Length: 261
Image (cartoon, helix red, strand yellow):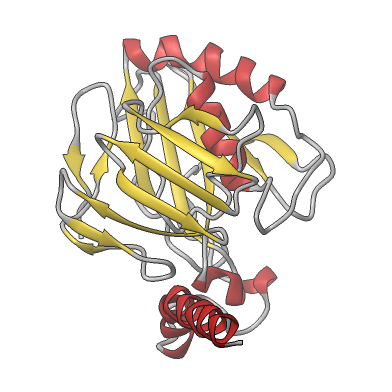
């Protein structure tokens, strides 16, 4: 009985630590939850280059907090591409309310707020590297093995999709935040390359897992929530809160740049 009580106490403590960040985000109103989602702001964030300013091909990856209470736990991610000389973008993502859940659509502004939550830029490829990536991205999106499926936890969801496409396309790299719940839900077995391109992810159904990578650092997945340490740009990675320490890097063919605070 004593052992069982200690195990139960340890489990309660673990769950409390994992949920502390999301509860803090809810308590401090850090997520968009007021009003109705359909009337929430969709203003561009100014992260996507205008065709007149950058006529070359562009590939960008974005993440923004989910709507409502889910935003305290996780983000929605998507991939945006624009051919050289094109006026409009192609957006690729998975949405819970669409069937098939995998959606590819055109848009004039790929960096719009996700129903009240401003996006962050995860990767930015331009010019010849982007031209090489776009056909491979289109092919990977078409080959996504779970186009009809959406499950917020533990996956497959929008973050599962983005991570899968990144892993499938050579030369496309992005370090997804720990709030990208579902990124560790692997569709092709228990082992996969880390999305940052220089590491490995081991995962059991997206519920328990470990990622070791040059860009990810050390990430431990417990019940779908991820804690970690970024060793390259020192920071703690925490569920809900996302990151305490130095800003992450935007991956891209022209090098890497710190995210503006």
